[in-house]
Image 1: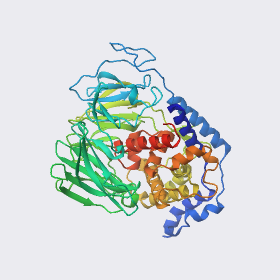
Image 2: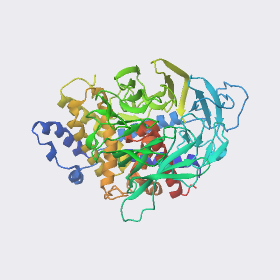
Image 3: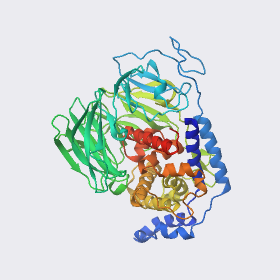
Image 4: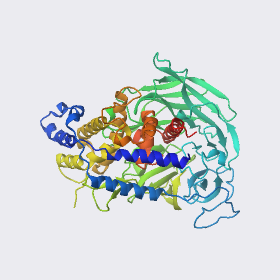
Length: 442
Length: 162
């Protein structure tokens, strides 16, 4: 059985679920919400669960048919070449079936990686001027089944300057050579530190034994295999509750760690990596933000609004981690922050998968530095490791079939847009450098 | 021309339009994570209740669809967490029914944590990039990437692909 078998089997299993339809009573109950609110009684609506017995399947055959059409379109869009790695030429090529080979990726410059769908086992390195910098042909050992595993490859974690790639075991340099080992670790909670030479993560202090929550250890992993436990911070309580490292700054000797129950962030801490002191702790409670985004140097934290799970109300705020004080409060109409620039002056945000509102904003003044104009949605992003630049990936959102139908209309089915993304580098002055071509995320 | 969810209109009319157009897609999203019709209906109902609660606060109506989608994903995850830890609330007709024709895959999928399930579904089925998955789940992109990696490892092991 191959990786392709596995992926197609997984997709098939998930697609089978499309046949499920809500019971006919659901829509009626939902329509009562707005109406009942006028009478201040919506809270007394009958719970959905009690309607189960009267709920029948009202699926129309046409919907299934269109779902199949949509899936086929998606699968066609996902079909890629299957070129073997090693088709190397010393100079860039422009073969219609093979991606250009730009040679070795030079040391000493910051790069990011994109995948040309013509050669899905290669990573194309670009510098932050938008120029091709080299081609990394992934070693066969890194690919579960060479040529078959489609991007993005979740087992590859890239450092922000592109100089190191963690495979979950070994660390590769920008030309695929092994430069370190980080073994015996739990990949789930680990991130690159800002020096590209360490990973930081959290792990339970001991295995779960059913006696209750387990303290979490903040650890720093070196490329030489040495693991340093910094301190205990927060608790893990099974798969739904635990801690995550949001930022790990070796340069600034600080890390931001969050604790969450399911998708609600309940606490965040600023931890000194030097003396293991908890420099600041902000308890948020179970009605806390849904997400906390930290700057890479751990100096600022954006707290998403949304008490009790709503992402729609209130004000997002940026806090200075040194004092815990609010440095700026963001208007509800501001974008949802996804990343800080390396110099902490700008944030990149969007409207959560909608074309409107993809912005780079000077968060202290709310000045919009750049705003995307076009139908694409934000599909990928990365902050340059120095300065103010952002790599912004713009792609197609959900598509509707048949063309021209509106969402929710009988027979109208949504399916994923093309995985191909166009990338632009947004500079701190609002100017933009486009990268020619369309790519997939690495 | 059909009126969009974000179009100008009375709040009630806009909300009614949202219910009529988005109930199906939101149910599909919740069901794909939960694989449980009743739980998915619960998630959609709670989503719309929360959506209505803040309906008037939204300064940019064009974001409503994205907001509701985001709430729905998170509500689906909460719904599962409220059920028996580590399990879905399996109902007759839901467990391994026609939507679970590949029983081995169903067992492997149901063995995943909620976040792992959500990333698998959002990425492989709904076509979201990992950055988009991270935004929907409220985690950093690297965490979404790790959840997916661990989910695939678990499922491959469960299905003896390793």
